[in-house]
Image (cartoon, rainbow, N blue to C red; front, side, top):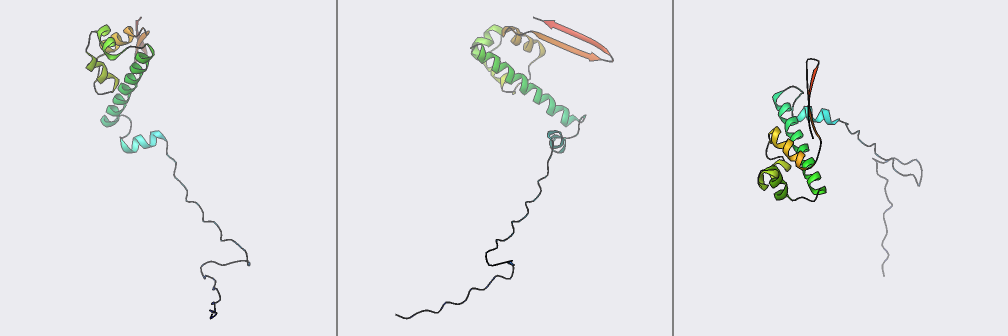
Length: 136
């Protein structure tokens, strides 16, 4: 059996050691930029007051209404068919409203919330005046 001669290990020039058992220094973590939701919406949709932003916020409000209607309907253990019958619209109409695929008229929303036995209040503010419509 022939013995192989091992070459002495060479230290890497890129890593400097302070001693025989020193560990390389950890790399600094890159800083992550922080953004608010407002920053992101402004960047990707547009600033407040622009038509694109107004459209985005309207669609968002309709989605919130739809989610609220679905949530309350399920709490009341009603199907979309049953709620549609109480309101006077088809199941497909209720489905589209819940999923944000259809913009419901105010009177339809009021009928839906009345059928779900919710208090409905609509408040309009203009030039220091307040108009409030109550429907129970």
